[in-house]
Image (cartoon, rainbow, N blue to C red; front, side, top):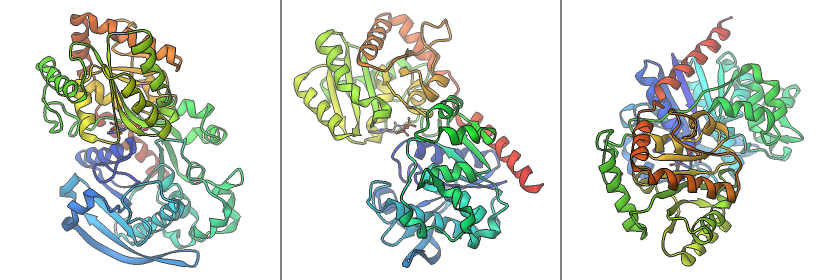
Length: 479
Ligand code: ADP
């Protein structure tokens, strides 16, 4: 079986969030289980491509048009021996040759052109894939182009899958850019429309042969709230399925993780985590004897990051809880400013690193005692799974994949996390108080740590579920 994944992100080439982790891991696990799997993604002019420049081989060149504008492109191949699967990088002059993944005024042009070239590439390959697996709205037109684009009629019978990593972002735009799309029979224009706008996520939900979400609970939630797509998702429920993400245990292994200050396994967890905690406390001026609660993530409303500053103030200044809090993240400028200001106001027991640091995130997973995730929306959430694998207790809201992966510590022997049912400053502060109490009982706390590390959240299980799903649509394509 041969699968082509198409995505805007793939770790370690380009990462903004969990999408990159998934697309950097799943193909590796698929290759290991005998499924031939590769990735097609935009080229970015970033650290990874600069340092691997010599390993990139030109496969083909061409021209892609958006209306009457033409852009030269090159497709570069990164050989399997680098990441464990082949990657094809689409470099379109003036469009995808930028440093960052998102955030440019011409993102619509960048990703529409990328999707057209991705389809050109599939047309070109001799051995056609059995399934084209698209990820999020940046690849949402591909199932439509394959099914209805005049140029791509040869791809009509290849099954396509859309995985929704986050339905908040849909990539919708006005009709004045419709002429950018690959030509199609105008009778099918309804497929690209959602309430008077062109919406690539809605397009893929309508056109892909299968829809998956990154956790079973998120699929249920999307039937009720999906940023305007709930009705459509209810309509397409029959072809939808929730498959929980996994942990790439090659990257996330506390015994071999080269980003940790102190490596450890189940037997040496107490000593190892102490080493990482000491390093963190030293770097951020925190008191090692107190429990350390950390947040890692994008500062967006969905992550509950707007509540962090008030919660930190309430916990440390009003309630005077004996705890350290460390925040790693970036995003909303207001949140960044609030947290920076708070650092001045509370010089001890609180610190923040505003920015993105893969390395620091690993040391936090390996050394901080509790991970705080007060998310309002969390399609799967990888942070809590990384935390658990490293023996860090998750404090999470009761939404999306967090509900699928965390059992409250008061819920019998199987429990290991702290679940927050309502997301507000009061409840977050109460959850931190519960964490402080758990920490105070050292024997119990250490036993829970070990329990967490034994939980199996690897990709092996999820990769099998994807395989079953692929087999079901390949069968359909042969009917
Ligand atoms: P999302 O994709 O919504 O951002 P996920 O939980 O699926 O959330 O994945 C987040 C990933 O991004 C994790 O690997 C997390 O460690 C990482 N991450 C998020 N923010 C930062 C940051 N500021 N520095 C380092 N890693 C980060």
